[in-house]
Length: 167
Image 1 (cartoon, rainbow, N blue to C red):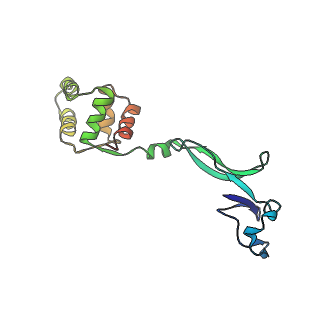
Image 2: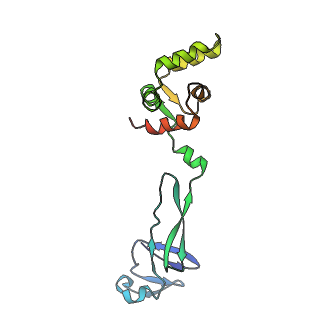
Image 3: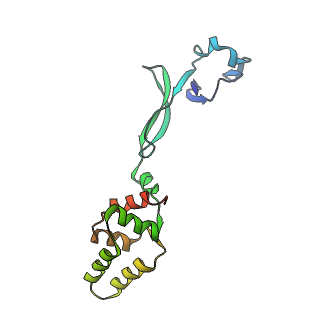
């Protein structure tokens, strides 16, 4: 990829154009083959920024005057962008497998926790959700309240959704 300034803006190209247009006028036909003109006309390579796409994204193109090339700014993903990449739901088998493998949480551990709760609608709602849900929703407030009670932080809960989404 190459780029140059045109009308005070950076324009990128996949390849040199066949015709170079400056100020609305065609200057060189078959410009792609006029290699002797490319540098003088402001064309420079675009150097691809290397970054971790899990935590960063490509920003705007800029000209690096020191190194005489164009490149892209690298921008950290926002909390909202990172959050949106975490799957929102897991099947019952995905979720319970994640609890077991990542944290050793078995049904026995969960049942022991349920036994510590006072009788009532909250306890019954949690037990129903645990036993009858076909999917577990990452944003479900009952799940987010329940996780720390069995020793799982909210960050660890999110990691289960990331790790076990593909199984």
